[in-house]
Image (tube, rainbow, N blue to C red; front, side, top):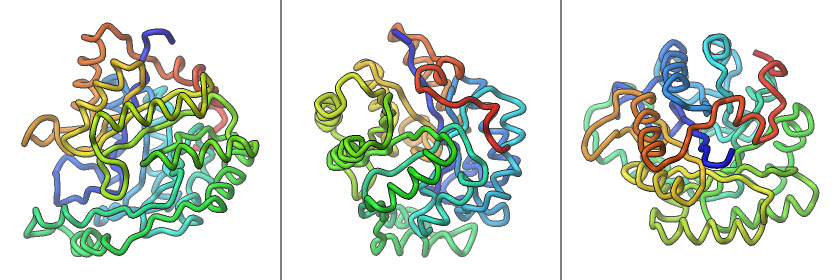
Length: 309
């Protein structure tokens, strides 16, 4: 994997709402189509949430996931990474229910509790496609996204021990790295650890490049050579942070979950457009893109033949 970079693509998430972009997929057909196109563009890992097909609100229902996962698996070799973050309005049991049923190769895992604030985005819009969107955003000034040590252990035992799932450890602040190191010391999460360093979410660490360097140095101190890492950044910081990560030898994540834009003031037409852009940047820097098979081997995944979809 020397000089090869894993591109992850987060297809829809639970942050943005349908009013914000016509390109944001929320029906099963839209999610499947965009995921397949992102894989064709170069994404080795597809990070997936589900949404209610009627109105686009976040859903943790395994039956909704099953309306698009088999199609994605049939059309691509990409690694499917299912959320255990779900949405901040869900309980932990709701957040892990789909993964417990579907037994994917990978799942995201949030490494600490935090304020997770979306409410500033609501000020940009006057008219809404669906009646749930505005209150979902404006009420987030009261949200705490709970990920206690007990919660994390439950997810680990249910999915890690129960299904052989590998985790993408989402770290929104430096303390989350220390939380993870503590749990590794307790015997959870065998190497190689896969970190996703996250910048620019209100409630987490800010989108300053100094913070990227600091998080990377902290990870080096805590995990030595027993980890791989990737970077995502919210909104307008997406591409510059991913570029910086690639130059430092890290992996990258893009997608409409993280940013709706392809450039200043210009909405992306699709997830694949973002994958194509970061692939071009990475290859212009002299790196190659990892295939799904190479990502599986590097991350130590169980294989796409051992999932329940």
